[in-house]
Image (cartoon, rainbow, N blue to C red; front, side, top):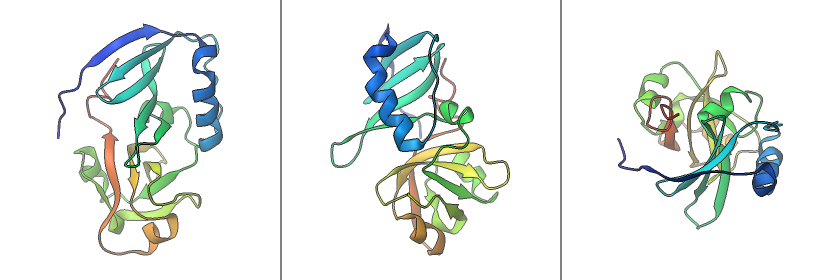
Length: 168
């Protein structure tokens, strides 16, 4: 499941130019990004807009099914913000599938943060270490993600080991 996207228009940017984007992200996820003093860049990666801090992709802006722009951390961004909201927790049986880019099935989901709603961009973490594994679009709300037994729970778009993960 590889894509043919390439990095385009990579350029330095000032914090004040992306401050509204970062502020919205901090409010949505309940985190403090603290990127002051870091070297900031923006780039286009396929249809996504990326923000790099010290040459590491931290923030991604994507468009959802209703053409609304959504700002979210990349998996590298979540490594520094493990207490962020909008998470879904999976058991160890789901990890090998997620590492290959598969969608997350509800059978592997054991918990979900209460504010997750259908259509939200969420991050998937393992239930033991609370480390990020993948990002994707929630198919159900938090309660149904945990209680359902069959079907897809999260449509995966970025996972550990994909091109974006290996990018620097």
